Length: 352
Image (cartoon, rainbow, N blue to C red; front, top):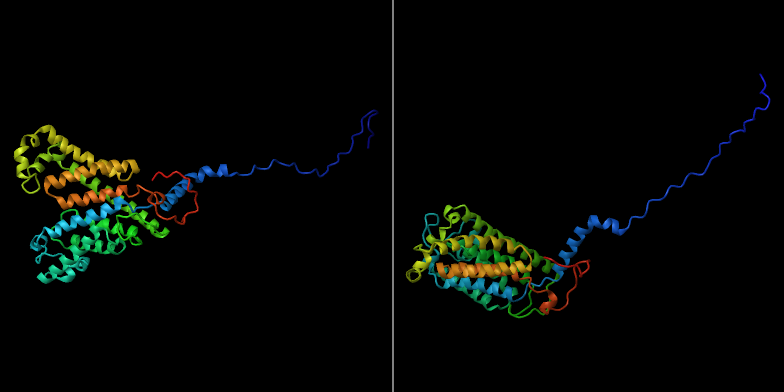
């Protein structure tokens, strides 16, 4: 082996050592602020809904008016209509009373079509409706009220159009009344509803609002599908209809106004606009619901007085007052403090 040239540097041996691992910077801790954006909308929605239910108090003047007006509308039908008018012969219903399927459980079908049975049914129905109208013991009259309303909607040969709405409203008011300890529905509640029934009452109130919106949306869309309504001429036919039109003395004294093109077009298109607006307002916030009520009350008063549909107009005025049921909270109603059914903070702004 040849030697190294003179002066050649001697290489130092390379020593490989187990060096310590390089410490990488740790991930910063995940804070609540970074996880909040993903869940914040859902959390706020839950908190808002829980707070709304906790403070929901439907028992006020609007609820009393709804019940009394619904009872008054049914009373007007029963008191001022004979049995032959309520149950007249029809090819579909030979005996004048609809008692097929679930309808056989109605008050009139249970007591039968005999004169004695019709009298018993009328007396019982009027007695219940008078109790509801007076506001006596809503806890004990809410279910009989629904049963009488349902019996009229099921069994009458020719319902007036408001019977189904009255039955639906009476049913959806039961959760707010079944645990009501007041003697009269005109008085302020002394104690709040239990948490479970408060939630049920709120859900029923939302369902009632949705049903009202569907009624008006369907009515507006049905009208819009008819050429006379789209062209603005439909109310001219309604004004002079021999059955549902204005009374003869109104047509004789205001015939020129009722035949005016501007009046006819305004009344026709105004009805469509009003119905669509009511359908939207009843699903909106408190202020919008008040606007819907302000439109619905004069609309149905005009229909009831002008077209002679008193019962129908009264029922529709009553159900539209449902938009005002959430006008006060538990604290504002004067009821005793309640236990909260939620774990959310009560300072969340409520926009329902």
